[in-house]
Image 1 (cartoon, rainbow, N blue to C red):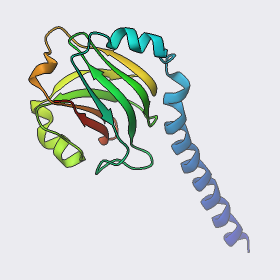
Image 2 (image 1 turned 90 degrees about the vertical axis):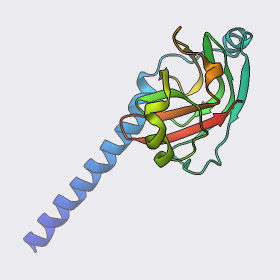
Image 3 (image 1 turned 30 degrees about the vertical axis):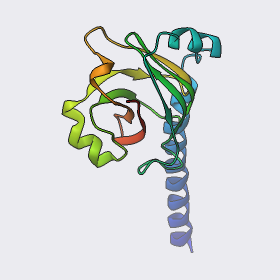
Length: 158
């Protein structure tokens, strides 16, 4: 009886530890995220945008934990999102010359993409475009989780 109780105790504690670790990975980016830009800030920064597109939840590799939704604008100085992305750690924004909606396609094309910057907020965002990147040379914007190698969302803008 003691052996069975000890095994049950170890299994339940491990299960709680795994669930707690997973919840921490999910919650930590939300807790440390800077304040999201306001709607008026997004409108101001997107006023000079040359392109716009929409992130959608129904992409091939998007799922309940990896998705984006809303209007994204792409300009020579800023990329903005008026919408939401699923919370997660280490999100990176890329531009690609080919539309991507799977992890396999992203990994295959990553060396040809331009890394624009980090996405640090999950409800609206503004990412500055480095001066050496010309968004008109690309046609797709992608959010990728670098830590876990997960496709989050993408949109074709031209």
